[in-house]
Image (cartoon, rainbow, N blue to C red; front, side, top):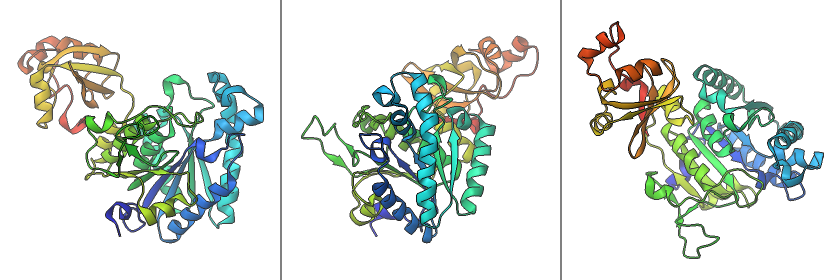
Length: 375
């Protein structure tokens, strides 16, 4: 078997997350494309029978609810419309999945999450435990962002990144993003006929990120290629391979198995669970700006010392997630050993001067290397 395809097989990935976008699931009239979805679920049933446990991350609630409520612009004219549409459409969406999976001998479970549910460590572990139990029972969890309560400040904003975070929580070895595009190109193929298709990405660096296009092709979804690359980065950090596949074909998972068409982002070994959670976070409480010497030390695998901090931003407490910045942007993320007040007092101070500044014995580092990941 082609190694690109084999990475997503039941033998290689005992748990798989499949994301389905709005433009694939819902037609232009706001109705579920049941025949197409039935084909996707037939693919999943085959994998389930082969021993692979499956999680579905599904968009579509807002589009479905907007039709039922008669809302303009697909329910996205304003936040209140989107929340009302999501609350209405989520019932219809979950019912469709429950019916179609039941017809195929599988049980569906619904989980709605917000950004905070996966950014807060305790809630992340709770979600992880729930997913683990459902999968151990052979249930197919169907997840979506809880758009009925989410606001701009606490939203993923797209289900691509949500799928990657869910894979992390579920301990999945692979993620498939079914999309209205068949993968990553060197440029937007809609506007550049010379754009070349990329089938494998072994290293997601600045050169690859420059190829992304942030637009959603259908107007129904909220993501784009930028969100998909961010999802790949999150998944790869947790040791999960990620594929962008076209959903504009019948039986898209079987199509991938037969043709290999899609872009595969290959994961390395993956970080330890806490570090993978840190790497996948989308928010931080504050920033520590550092000098070039401190940045070099971080790249060498050392802790961040207060002596290398030049400026402190934000309000945070001990144990909160903060980012480390140089003049070129963020370079690391970790758990702060100090509050923002303490960090401000200690900025630039050598270890032997810190006790006098604080009035008590200092900790070994501003961010210990065991609680820090490079970005």
